[in-house]
Image (tube, rainbow, N blue to C red; front, side, top):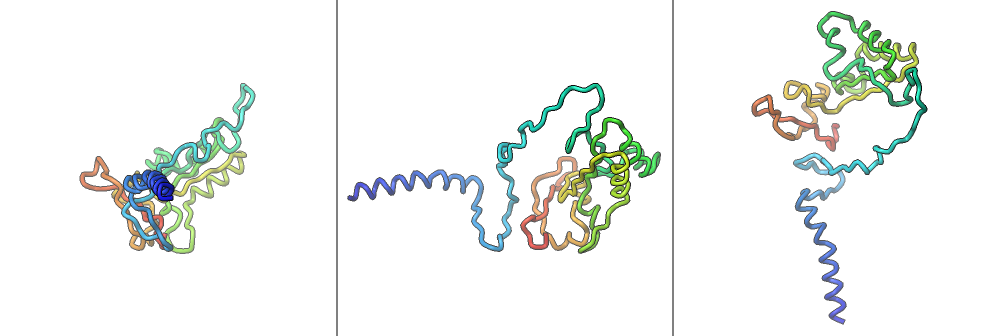
Length: 199
C-alpha cells in the first residue's frame, strides 16, 4: 500500500519539476483580478505556428498585366511614422500631390496609413484625424484601391523625445523601461503598461 503512495508522489514531483523550472525562467506570473502590474511586459515566446500565418492561401495564374492582389498586394504609404513623403515634408510637394502621386502608381494595390495613437486622438472620447485620412480614402475610392492602416500603440522611431500615446494619457499610464537606446546615451526605450486600467 505504501509503495503505491510513494510511486504516486514521485510521479507527481516529476510532473511538477518542469513547471517549477518554467516559473523560475519566466518569473512568477500569478495573477488575480484585476491583474496586478508586473515589472516586465508579456513578451512571449510567441511561435509562428500559433496562428499558421505562414501558410499559402491562394495561387494565381501568370499574367502579363498587373494583377490586383485582394487584401494584400503592393502597398503605397500615404503616411508612415514620420509623415508623408520626403518631398512633402520638405515642402517640394503638397500632401494632396503626395497622395495623388502614390495612388496613381500602376503597381500599388493598397494605400497604407501608419501612424501613432497620438496622431489620431488628442482628447478623450474623440478622434482627430489628420487630413491625410480623407485624402487617402478619396484616392482609394476613385482608383478602386484598398486602404489599410495601423494605429501604433508604441513606436521606437521617436523615442526618447516622443512616445505614441496621446498627450492627455501620458501622465495616467505608467511606462515600463525595456532597454537602452544605443544612439541616445543612457536613454531607454519605454512601453506603456498595456494592462493598466487607463490604457
